[in-house]
Length: 429
Image (cartoon, rainbow, N blue to C red; front, top):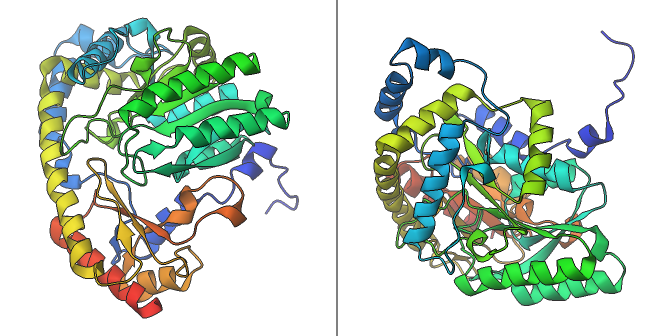
């Protein structure tokens, strides 16, 4: 045994004790618990046959197979980037963009899932003490990324239309008045079916968000980037989403668009991508070169084959149909088991994988709360405590919410989990 303590870096200390690790541990230690916590995809939706056919295609002859099994490039395979550009442009055309803005393969960086892109952007843009403005609540894993680079998060109010633009503008005004506008580097939004609430940013606010970012960038004398996380864009169950925030950035100098195929196809593929201004793209490629000098080439070739053959589009439609059923099962179960409980409410999402439930203010939902222990140890059901999804000082975070995922469980498992959860809430209330 080493007699000396390891002198870890400050970055390692900032990244310590992340909630995602605790949730994974709870899942392993309680295998019989019905998990409404895991943000995993439905195992039955995983495209085994499609992946096999795509693998046959990329390994169909020796020359192509050798190229597929060789190193790729830092920015990503050229063929895949062209398919991604075409795919993104088709999505924007379907949703009737406000301007004829199109992307090209040169604007795209391929990453190991969109999570790698989020981490690279935090490294590229944020020094310790710099500020990222986020909605309250928002994606808790990215909050961990921000904490891991020593950044400060300021949580702003959101409503049924997403991040409130009046609150954003007011906060930027306040930061300027106290001499901290120079520390603001990033505004983060999950534009479609936000993890955790399932709420999308409204069309009007998308345009206003870009305008606000550009206005305050001028006041600051440096760019305040908007990071649009579109991880759930394809998972719409009622109608296609509106044009992306990216489409409102006509000059192409303010918005970063992050996409992934983890939710719409297969997380094991680990292929994500980003659209971003050239200056930032060069910085991301430099950082990525130090990490892996290119995400897995085989996976990229596989996705290129799936996009070219049309099999991805077919599978995405099947995934939407399957998750629509599961979304409806969770909403039906919530109405059945929670509607008679005073002070309980939930969001009815039009896409994504989550239902956001709010309890009366006096019922805490955190890891150390009586409710969480009752749910896991007695009722054998697990959820994500909502307080994890709030940035800013710990003492100011709301503690009476739960993120419930319908991604993994089948409809009968969803109903069972919601029934058990209601039992736990009734016991504590």
